[in-house]
Image (cartoon, rainbow, N blue to C red; front, side):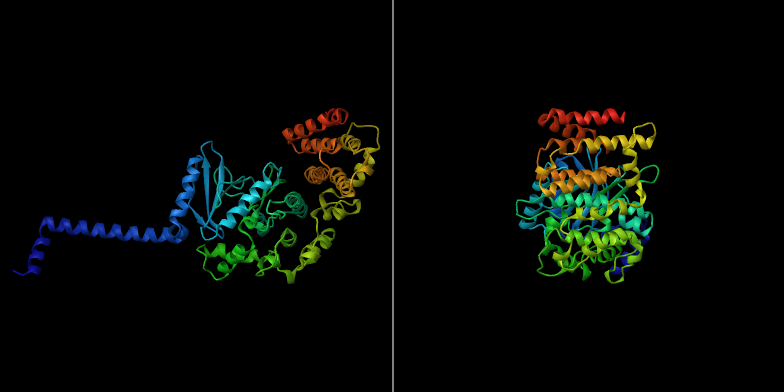
Length: 465
């Protein structure tokens, strides 16, 4: 009897049939496993290419009590994952690849981290450097791990009115002016370098008003550096980054908003790049369309913004504005008030002169009167730059733009540190933003220097009550 005949007899038996069925099941399971592995590999190619690198970084996070709660997602910079600390705080983890995380890049991230340590960068999403390749950002996702609305989505859905666009842009200006005032110990001023619509988060209150604007990804471009960033852009254009096609197309469209020097090989990149990207972002938000420099619909952009944005979009960095606060020279002129505060500047000035304070508008006028009393007494002794900043702060406060006014005062405080009048006005502005602890901090500083000036804060609170 040959082998084939014996196999036939074996398979016709009950044991043979059972073994054959078992073999079929094992083969099917192996095939399914192979399909799932391939699908997982396509969804996170980086993990397969740099598995040991990501495993090491994950171990560092576990020691901090941080664990991943979402699938890993490959991005332009590396890998993103939502996770949670043991106390329930949710954050977005980003780990760049070992190809990008060179010794120089790690030092740039560390230099950025040292420069912002102890700074009051309230308009930026909180950022924490875990190691050279890994950072955590809180406030960019909600407690369920879902990302907050970005300017990119709001722009596409036309959800922002002109007034809301202006308010959003002013908050971004406040953030960038604070960042540009800082220098790293590498000898360069800090800059954002990746101010794309996807990096601007907008929170709304129950009445659909802009509650908060946060700028995310603050350390990425500075940390990675111009050359590495250009290399990533080149790889992205060639389609060699292991990311989803939709995300790739979205990034390619947004990268065109970056300053020319960020895309030109060998060009020097400074904080001036943020002016160009800000201009492109503002144009996109005002026109509700993708930025195309040669096809800007200037007629859709408020006239008071045009001159500033035209300067921002100059190809030559030297021809761009040197200070984000320049915009207020136009916006806070009584004749160029913001859309949602049209005429408010003149009305408030008129109300300040009244004796009564029984109505809501009179009460506001009285509060602004107290702010006038908090002016620096001997401004002629202050540098002209500080006097200009104080004037801009007054204009902002007169339109209830407390956060923007704070930005001007913080700039003034850096030039003339520990001036009690500046400190007491910072206390008042932070109080009106609901930041009570910060208000108390600046009030204590002012009182420790000049007790009489410090009392102006209590006078203001008494008036408000």
